Length: 376
Image (tube, rainbow, N blue to C red; front, top):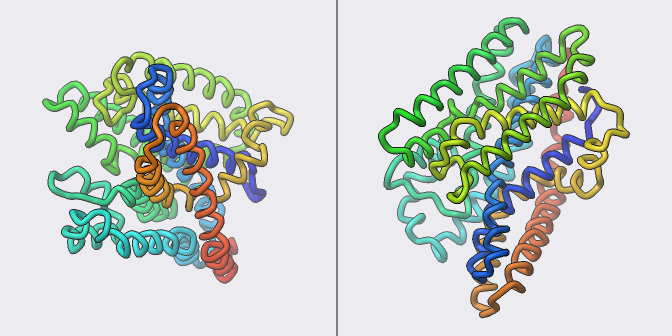
């Protein structure tokens, strides 16, 4: 894992495109009642899986880093400083930007600022979203997934440091099994299905499951002969789990095919199959030759470009989504034209924002990582 695998950037690119599609097209549907376009909007609901792909990728990459640097003299310092340089500067800029403009666009958020700001700074907004009365502006609502990742980053390095690989495998598999069983029981035993849906969607311990799947792959790859075994099973795991994932979405129709929206098939199996096909894909990228069709698709320059800037795109895409929705709505355009133009404009604006933040901030922060190199 020393060499950068460009297909992983491509997977990030797909993930951020999917998440944006979820948030974009349900708003683009405001402009038209055309049945074909409304059906397309329903399909874009699958964009929820973009977050799960990010979770699996995070689990895999972070665990790979931790395992390689386990004997480093400054194991904890280097890990947390390097993560902070990658994540915190842009996150704080996003919060500052919204705080500057929130009073003008969302006064209800401003009224809760004394409560909301500490929660966001401590990365606890995913838990806060489960309580009635807590409001977080739409501009920052998507940061709930960042909160879950940060909570995982806080705990996982200590576990990796204390346990050997065999113990890590047992802990990971046990966690996945307990999480899956809890979710299945909760789906059928919780008196309020909508409440259960939200809980398992936002609760950290429930969403750690995907990161443990990624971590398991990273741990397994450290064993002798693992490369060939991953090569043997990666493609079947990807194809079978993706097929089941698609079937679960079909079973969710005609309702909303989204696990947060009381979809029993997706609550039971959506998270697990999403994690499995992501793990299968990563396995293909690592063990298959570059000529493989999946590696060619995910390694293409467009997706790898989007993957490089995906963090900023993820954080700031709702800013573009909401501002441009207002612009298009007041233009009085209706029908298929704004349905197409609004998403295209928003994707373009988000990419421009990401390019600006990269060159003005991110790349300069990342250069500081050289002072905290791992030296096993």
